[in-house]
Length: 375
Image (cartoon, one colour):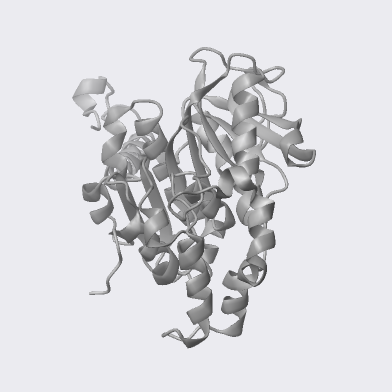
């Protein structure tokens, strides 16, 4: 509210005409500014803004998985930090002093590529983010379908059992979540409890050339490359993972993972209806309705509709393509949903449920709750 002249005690009647005009102009200008501020639309994506913590970055911790042929698994970590007074804004804040005021913090796992986008933001909201380095997209499908999820699970085990130098006591690995986009969306989905269904996958590849709508040779090769040498692919995965009494592989997950957030995911053919039915923890899926890389209908909708967990949500970004991860506006929305979803499930912030609710989504013109249908 703009204060009246009487309230301020300032006399606009005294002085020269020039002074009176200057004072009046100042008051009118201030009233206009305050009026514009009052009328300006508020950002509904409240949690897209940085949280109450500063963040720090530890570039690399190195581990070796001796159970998989001395496989190197290196990680980058983003965490709540205390910066020196007057510290210049930075995208990195390397080796900043950890903020232990509310430690230990819940853990979020991803590739370092996805972590570089979301890590600082999530750390500012009171999470530690561990990103596995070297994970990236691959064309066509290959052994990364197994190697990348197992790398992330190995990283979880290391930070849970080996205090990271300089970050001792900062991580609560018992409250963990996963998030990822595209190839990393698959990794996150894989940790929801779903299981590979070899029979479904191989049958899909046998029928791929006659499917309707027609699939191009590129997409058939993309999905079905492992099918051409399934025995070798299964051997690479290992007997512990492929052992089965019902024809399905064992899940690539860990009981410490409490919630997963796949964005632009894939994996529908690999898991199938039977395998997806084993999802057993909260899942939030984000995807653009015009995505043809992680195909919205063939991948996202199928995955969402067949997930076994009843605690599942799909938020569809109307008109967005796979490249929405490069859009500042779309990423801000994804950050909001990540902070809300994990804040609710890993931090226990019950009020955050409203920020990824059906009511919230339906109030946004460019989002759809569940499967998108053009009206």
